Length: 324
Ligand code: NDP
Image 1 (cartoon, protein in one colour):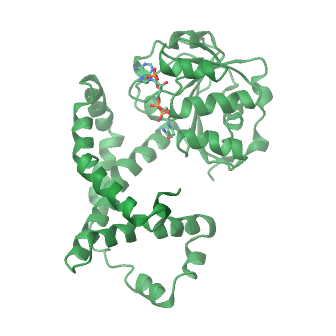
Image 2 (cartoon, rainbow, N blue to C red):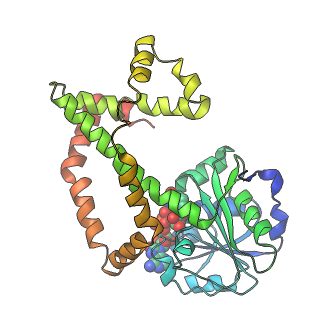
Image 3 (tube, rainbow, N blue to C red):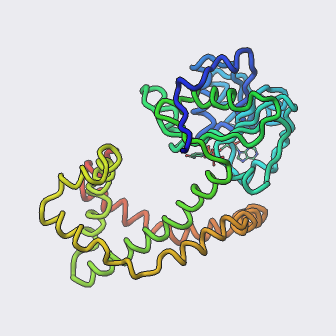
C-alpha cells in the first residue's frame, strides 16, 4: 500500500544545527524560506543579485549568490526545472538537496553529490505560505532519490514538515512517478479537457446561445469550481445528492456517451513522449533557444484579444466573478 506520511512521522529536530539554503526566491522559494524560518530553522537565501535578493534581504534573510548554497547542510533548490541543471551547485557528500519537483532527477538532468530528496507541494507557490500562515495544510509528494548518509528520509520529512507540507499528508512517490504524473496532467489531461470544452462551446453556439452565457456556465459563474470543491470535500456519490433529479438523471444516463471515442490511445502516445524523455529533450532545446516557441504559443492562446474579451466580460458581469 502507498505510504502516506503525516506530521507525527517527522521531527524538525533531524535538522538541529543545520544550515538550510533556499536557492531561488520566486513562487516557491519565498514561501519555503519564510515557512522554514518560522518553523525554527536557520535559513539563508541564495539567489542572483537582483530584485529577488533585495526582497529576501528586506524579508530579513541573509542572502548570497547561488554558489554560496554549496556550504549549506541542506539545499532547497527552488528554481525553474529547465534552469536547475545550469546552476553552479556542488554540495558536499553529507549534504541533502531537496527538490520541489521530480523532473530534473527523473530525466537525469541534475545529479548533485550527497542525499537527494523530493518535497513537491501540490499547491501554488504563494499559497504554500498562505496555507502555513492560516494553519491550513496542503498535500505534498515526498520521495528519496538517493540516500548516502542514512538520514535522507528523516531530513527530507523534516523539511516537508517545516514548510507545512505534512499537515494533510504526504504521498510517497519516486521522482519519476511524480514527474510523469505532473507532466501528464499538464500535457495529456489538460489538452483533453480543453478540447472537450471547445467542442461544447461549438455545440452551444450552433444553438444560438451567446458565447458570454456559455463561458459563464463553464467558468465565470463559479458553479463548476464549487462543484469540484464539493467533490473534493464530500466525494462524487455524496455531492450528487445536491443536484436536482433532472440533473442527476441526465448526468448518469448519458455517462457512457463518449466511451467509444478512443481517448486512451492518444493519451498513451502523449504519455510516451514524457516517459521516453522526448519531452525533456524538446524542452532543453526550447530553453537553449531562449523559449521562442513558448512565447509564440502564449501570444496565440493567451494574447491580447483573449485577455480583452475576458476582462470585458468580467467587468460586465460585476464584482462577484472577480472575487476569489
Ligand atoms: P519561479 O519561476 O518562481 O522561480 C524564480 C526563481 O528562480 C527566482 O529566484 C529566479 O531568480 C530564479 N532563477 C530563474 N532563472 C535563473 C537563472 N538562470 N539563474 C539563477 N536563478 C534563476 O519558480 P517556481 O517557484 O515556480 O518553481 C520552483 C520549483 O518548484 C520548480 O522545481 C517547480 O517545478 C516546483 N514547483 C512549483 C510549483 C508552483 O506552483 N509554481 C508547484 C510545485 C512545485 P531571479 O529573481 O534572480 O530571476
